[in-house]
Length: 106
Image (tube, rainbow, N blue to C red):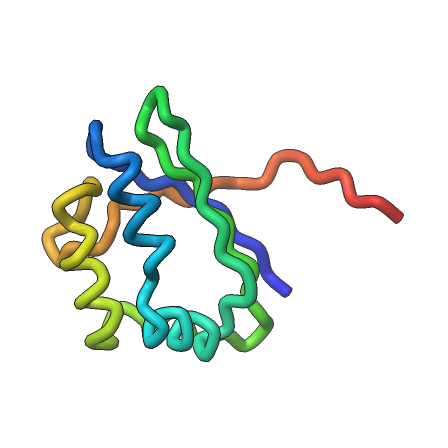
């Protein structure tokens, strides 16, 4: 299992709308993420800065690199583009993070 973390940025004033849209995430998108190998996808919000902190746990052999080409992913990005900082293709601007500490129970 691989774990990656990254940040994204929410536009000010859209905190509740962001949560609402994710509470109502499309079943087709959830299925697509699972089929690509994502087994856990958690997003936290720093309400003071609008920074979204995301963690994905992916199976070995995942196919997430193909997600940006899928129509459902493009549709989701377009749906979210009005409330997030995005790239020209509507994908969220994301910054990868490096793990600097982990303490796992034995």
